[in-house]
Length: 276
Image (cartoon, rainbow, N blue to C red; front, top):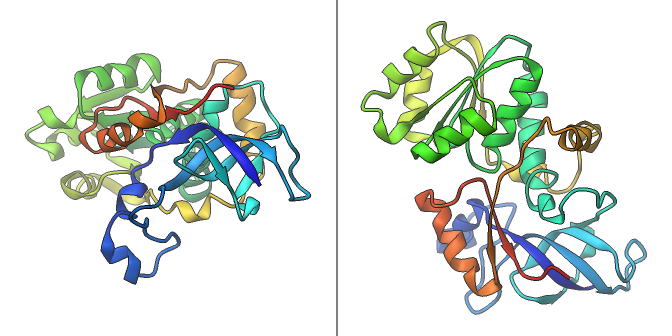
């Protein structure tokens, strides 16, 4: 199937595919090959198809290459886009992998209840911002951490978190969590690890739940029942806000990807290849 790429997704897992170690390790995704275009999630338009499930003109999202046009040998890795009443770029995030990750991780793994306390690290990122909003809609008390004042303000004012803090300004993470959660944490949505995880473990309630986010192989191939039926109406009603950090031009893609690891992006990082 020949497609024209429209939007490409920048995601942290792509960094691990650049390691030589991955080539000899067991992984659900192979290492990138030097000299070949990298691959990742994206949105594309079908130009020619020999597959019975896709026709010329169809819009799809799934695994594609970082190039303007690509011949996909396995179209089964793509989903046909049926709902075009939301921005197509959302299929790289809110109604794509990031949304599925947030939805499954929070609702199906955490089994949250109204009134519970929820902490989210990297809360302004593609997944964190959605987990926080799902939790608020359920009636939970939600706190997030982020790496700048701008991101903290975004969490509290745009995503309606109950509280948020800049972890770079907190000399004592344990103290920051005790300040925000005097009665401790029911659910921790883990996006960063390291010292933050160490501090969270000291502040978890008995029978609390921690979701280690990043196991995306579970979400690429199937959409959990009820996901779009739940999320699409909430988008249209303005109950869920989705913030994107968009750069234009394939030539700016590498810098956008590198920027993920210094926290330069605010929200879901997307590369626009073409709008047509």
